[in-house]
Amino acid sequence: MALFNERINRSLERQVKLAVTGLSRSGKTVFITSLVHQLLHGLEGTHLPFFQIVSGGRLRGTKAMPQPDMHIPTFRYDYAIEQLCGDPPTWPKPTNGISEIRLAIRYFTNNPLLKLMSPVNTLYVDIIDYPGEWLLDLPLLELTYEQWSEQIARLCETEPRLSLSQAWREFLDTLDLTSEATDTTLRQASQLYTDFLHRCKEPQYGLSLLQPGRFTMPGEDLKGAPLLEFCPLLQMPEELDSDDKSLYAEMKRRYESYKEHVVKKFYKEHFTHFDRQIVLADVLRAFNTSYASFVDMRDAINMVLKSFHYGKSGFINKWFGLKIDKILFAATKADHVTPNQLPNLEHFLQNMLATSNNNAIFEGVQTETLALAAVKCTQAAYTTFQGKKISCIKGMPIDGNKPVALFPGEVPLEVPMPEEWIDGRFHFMEFKPPRLANVHGSGLPHIRLDRALEFLLGDKF
Image 1: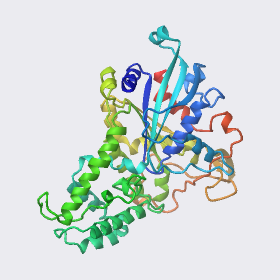
Image 2: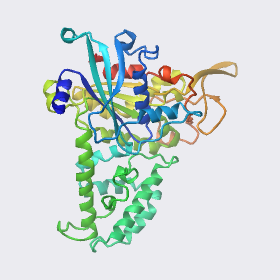
Image 3: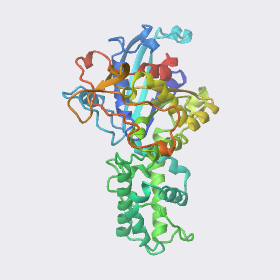
């Protein structure tokens, strides 16, 4: 009966499954927290002027509801908002597992058909939060062990991976891949490879394309599991029998087992029924790091987006399995640049994800690009330099106790050439959350989150 009701709600436009997609540190948890808070407090202020159901006075209220999947932990919005409202305020802790929340949005409908049944209707919005690292496993479903190993080998031919992977590569050189596999060898090889991935994540390198994703963020269910004790190989022996007990054959078996029992399970349970998607990208972090970091982020996001189902939603699709029909590409931390740089930030993201955007449009999907800040933590300011008025931003640095005003720099419209990506050209500072006096009585300060809500949900009311 529950499944039947879910299908009825979908077919009558009463339910939306929203995919909040983004790599590690892209701001998914903060975005979901702010989105939930804005909707729960939609009746209490004027913080959503471009969300027409609010500005038009048709919102009756929003309430958190029991989630449909009882086996998934609840997204702890209350914990996250408590951290944002603390003294001092802090950013919510990064996601280390999967969680879910359902919101019921009650509203006066403009739909003539629905008005005949009831002037007041309810839209259910389901949101799932999960570590960004897990997304990177989805492309593995289309790769054999040999193809994946070849891909990693190519990545390790250039810096910074060439240096960071040295200890792991030297260990592989000592192994006879045709010898019988032992738990000790498998464990040591996988640990050295995992150490290499963790070094790639360090802020000074900021690499994103780190597979398998569960190696750096295993979750409580897989921490220390033998299923994670494998790694790619840089050289392949001749094909061996499937029942061979060699090190190579065991690595391959564990890779295939990982795809079957971890990746496919996660994909089928959570990624085959979304109908709206927002893709979050922290472009500014790549600017601060290196050209290699930017390329890695761009390739990782485009690779992940190939794993989603895109196409025009209709009654049949809604009954037998949804396809995403709207995608919003969002550059996060828009409050870390001056307001006049927002068009540049949007244009840059459009260029960065042009391949994925073109593929989606070809399949009939409606797309849009926005620069937004789920929680605005800076204020616009001005200073005078050599007699000229210069736009600045003012906020509390993440590692400081006094507010600073600065000009963070310009966002280029096009990707700079590798040789132009020099130290000091970009310096987009990280900031602490703002101190808020009445967060439980109004929405959080934001930039363009109302526009995001209107694009993702506006046509459902």
